[in-house]
Image 1 (cartoon, rainbow, N blue to C red):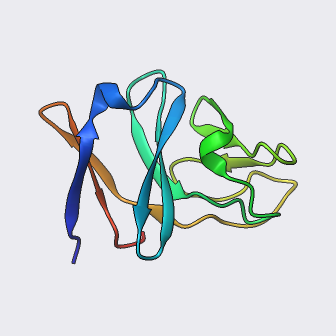
Image 2: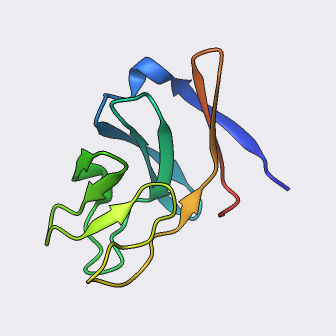
Image 3: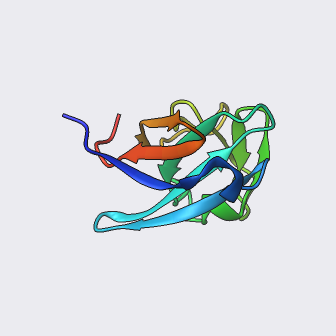
Length: 105
């Protein structure tokens, strides 16, 4: 079961950037692509725990700011040749408001 929480307006998340949401299970980075798609990942690279919210968003990936590992925003999977996964969370947009579920995908 997914419990949706509103985190704010779409315009409050910068294009090709992120906003951090604090939760009891750690910080969640909510990303916005250039096409206004929104994705949410645990704000921690599986490699050396870099803050993904500080990374560069390109296409549907984010590059970790520490060692440039690329993580797919849709799944949280690290792009080959590297390996790993950041937890991902469901998102939705309704009436220009962004919602996330704290239930991991």
